[in-house]
Length: 186
Ligand code: AMP
Image 1 (cartoon, rainbow, N blue to C red):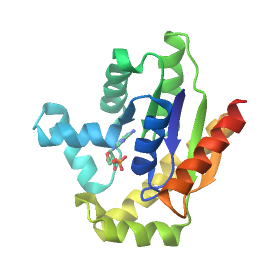
Image 2: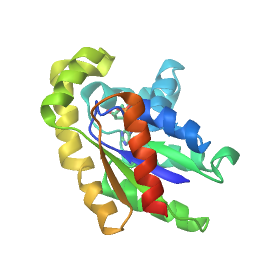
Image 3: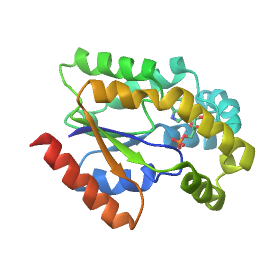
Image 4: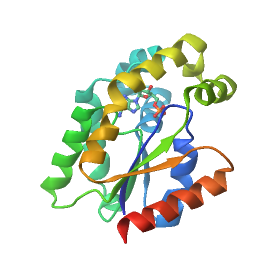
């Protein structure tokens, strides 16, 4: 299973990614987690990413694409992966296609977790991560709408999009995702 997850900040991508990766026995690759780990370890990549993350902006594609390419080249990602937080814009989506084409594989699906704006703001304001301050939340939502949401049409056009509602119990959302993906891939 080669899967990407897309959805607004606060849709629960990280949580669902953990459950789905376990179900499909594939590595969960979160670009946000990799950036945060680099930040914590004080690496040059972490230092470069920090100023963008602090503002709610996307880290430049040049840094992000290279990091994903390195991660996907690892052995555990050879037969499948779940990408959480990448791609974040159409250019990254095109780069991902090219990376996969190079090794002769295709994505199986793009799973969209959908959530309305009111619910997003409510959830983010109780999460309390460093980049969850109100004005940064607002900026991250704008960035999502302007840069990331267009990838939904990109994957719809590629006939890879599977959309589920990201409301209700965590386990019900996971079950709905697995059911929708089975239907799509059958
Ligand atoms: P996340 O944990 O996915 O919400 O990501 C946290 C932050 O990391 C984002 O607000 C961005 O600054 C950065 N980030 C994560 N993934 C990407 C990506 N694919 N492209 C650019 N920046 C990213």
